[in-house]
Amino acid sequence: MSHDLLVIGGGAAGLAAVRTAVARGARPLLVTDGPPGGDCTFTGCVPSKTLIEAAERGEGFDSAVRRMRDAVARIAAGEDEAALAAEGVDVLRGRAVFRSPGEVEVEGRVVSAERVVIATGSEPLIPPVPGLDGLDHLTNETVFDLAEPPRSLVVLGGGPIGCELAQAFARFGADVTVVEAGERLLSHEDPEASRVVADRFTAEGVAVRTGAAVARARPVPGGSRLEFDTGASVVADRVLVAVGRSPVTAGLGLDAAGVATDEHGAIRTDPRMATTSRRGSYAAGDVTGRPAFTHAADAMGRIAAANALRRGRGRARFDDAEVPRVTFTSPEVAQVGLTEAEAARTHSDARVAYLPMSEVDRAVTAGRTDGFVKIIAVRRTWTGNLGGGRVLGATIVGERAGELVHEIALALRIGMFTGRLAQTMHAYPTHAIAVQQAAAQFFGGYGGRRARTVRAPGDPDTGTDR
Ligand SMILES: Cc1cc2nc3c(=O)[nH]c(=O)nc-3n(C[C@H](O)[C@H](O)[C@H](O)COP(=O)(O)OP(=O)(O)OC[C@H]3O[C@@H](n4cnc5c(N)ncnc54)[C@H](O)[C@@H]3O)c2cc1C
Ligand SMILES: NC(=O)c1ccc[n+]([C@@H]2O[C@H](COP(=O)([O-])OP(=O)(O)OC[C@H]3O[C@@H](n4cnc5c(N)ncnc54)[C@H](O)[C@@H]3O)[C@@H](O)[C@H]2O)c1
Picture 1 (cartoon, helix red, strand yellow):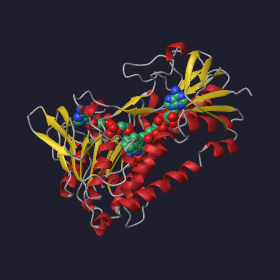
Picture 2 (cartoon, rainbow, N blue to C red; picture 1 turned 30 degrees about the horizontal axis):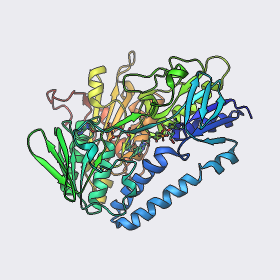
Picture 3 (cartoon, rainbow, N blue to C red; picture 1 turned 45 degrees about the vertical axis):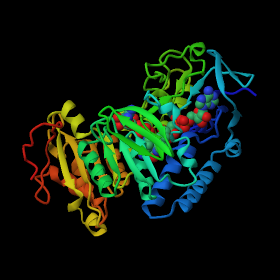
Picture 4 (cartoon, protein in one colour; picture 1 turned 30 degrees about the vertical axis):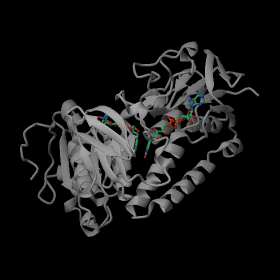
């Protein structure tokens, strides 16, 4: 049977691409060498969020693992080959290798493809630390297979994967140390967000070593030792490597396909998700080096398929700036649009409203007051700060921050003024009312706080917000 669209990779991006094709009346073929669902379902979001939630509730590891396997199985069943066949998607299991721009070989069988979406995802990056290869280290591909929590665990990397799993394993009783090369945990986030998470880690007994360069790794009886360039070292039963991701492009035959990659091996794409090198070839998801999140992969997959199937030039575009992100530590760290530091660089007259969770009644009643809301807004060219200024972004740290941030995502998308947020009645006492209270600071103040001009880290505090 001939197909209108060939999609390589059955993760979030590939699934979104084939489903979009079907919705448009096209016949897609999905080629994937792993089970449909990819990283998110089997070795990423689903198992990690199930473990995190179980650990937060104080469940034991055995019961958490049972719950995790059940969650993975239930979600996988909605996207497996049988489910996809029922939706009108043909699936071919096997590894795809391009032979020429219009030809892909899958386990000896050649498939012709005028229009292709490459969605081969990413894999864990293993840093070039001498001796690390000789350790039986864990990554996201193996950590969810553990039958019991290690007694002690060193997590290499204090990004989202490292922070989420460090806290979960500590709550399951492991003695956890996070080793981060940079100056702070969650280095992409607002520095105060990093401080709040580091303080909570310390309070929960998770050791945090920042600015730590591992010079060497060695096996020791019963575990592993990481030696720092300072001469200090840390020993643990297991080491979890979580220092970032590499796009999966090696062995795919991209040269034969005429598709170009950047210096990190990611496929170069324009905002329409077209590869910048080969007409008819699109890419989506982690393999593009764009924001590595399931919702972003899903959006990219939909856009790539829609544009690939259009006659002429497709118009749908992906905007990296609109991608919200949530790190599911407790407290959660949520971000959309610009951080204060980014706004200080690009819009020096922008203002920021800051509200600590200790002034939000629901956080007080819940007894969890660490965190804050920051909303950033900028004046309009002609109307200035009338209406409170246009929303540029927000950082929210706290319980349920990952839910609250979507109100700001919507505000950003439609170019909303902060006045609309402040005027929208929010039910009391919710966590979400924090957004309304913070937005009110753009109008002469609220609860004694006023929005102030944004500052880059290190800028003097002008003290205008109190
Ligand atoms: C521990 C962890 C937790 C995470 N938590 C979150 C979270 O909470 N929220 C969030 O939004 N994101 C999270 N992410 C990120 C998210 O999982 C990824 O961004 C997302 O899964 C990327 O989807 P993808 O389709 O691009 O790639 P993948 O899911 O990696 O899918 C790629 C697919 O391509 C197939 N493939 C590769 N090469 C070939 C080939 N040559 N031929 C055929 N098939 C091939 C593979 O088998 C795979 O199935 C997490 C990631 C990790 C590791
Ligand atoms: N909740 C979520 O949405 C979620 C959760 C997990 C992962 N993800 C996605 O997966 C991506 C990858 O996550 P990640 O945490 O692996 O990567 P990351 O790149 O976000 O963070 C890796 C951290 O490791 C540090 N590092 C690098 N080399 C090091 C070394 N040799 N020693 C010590 N530290 C070192 C970096 O400074 C950085 O802080 C994320 O950026 C995100 O897009 C999302």
